[in-house]
Image (cartoon, rainbow, N blue to C red; front, side, top):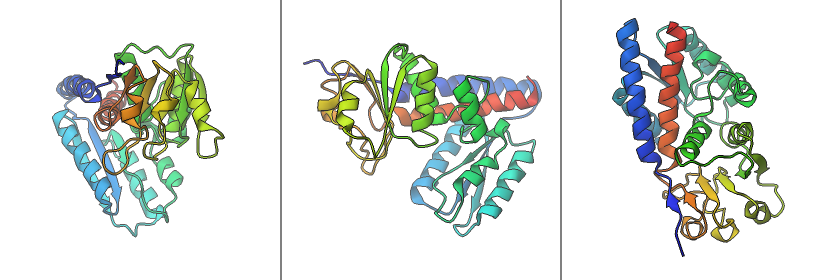
Length: 282
């Protein structure tokens, strides 16, 4: 039996970051201003600290300045909103990333909405979701945006295909479905209340697993020849798809790690340079 071909997000992300670095250098040379991404972290969740450090390192490689704002875990929603509004008003900052999770006491949506849409390079605001859904200029949610770049790189045209998105989060599942819909896929959203998830997955030409439950999607439910995008990341480098069984039935599949993850960061950096170019009028 032929195994699925791996969709190498690491290699594609490397090429995207190299292109972003060239664009950042050109922008800096033309304007005298270096694109700047501000990262905001509330508390010291170890995984979040690691992610932020990784993003700062990638910024340096791409010629993007990074400003890190670290707030104590006890920070209130009002204090966080104030910080984000200050960054939104700072002309030296071109993009803002609010690392989540932020703690149950914080109103996450209020915090996201304090980010100016023109600096929402992570695609988390109402404005970004709306422009993304209507195909207007703006910023896409980074993981779904990275998924679409992967599909394009491997010549997967969603038009006319049945796509099943497992997960409905505001920054992953929902926007992934909207981007697929915009490319003329027929999209079904599945979630924790879905009756007979297996039956829905079996109909899918494209499966996007984004629910945060290890190995939820079983290989036996993958339609032979389907494209499988695993956007889940669980402890132990385990995705939302049972990789060992799915690789026997899919035509293309993303590994965990090394699939969707690198593309998320690459998309963030690309959109930061896009934001800087728009704000600087070049």
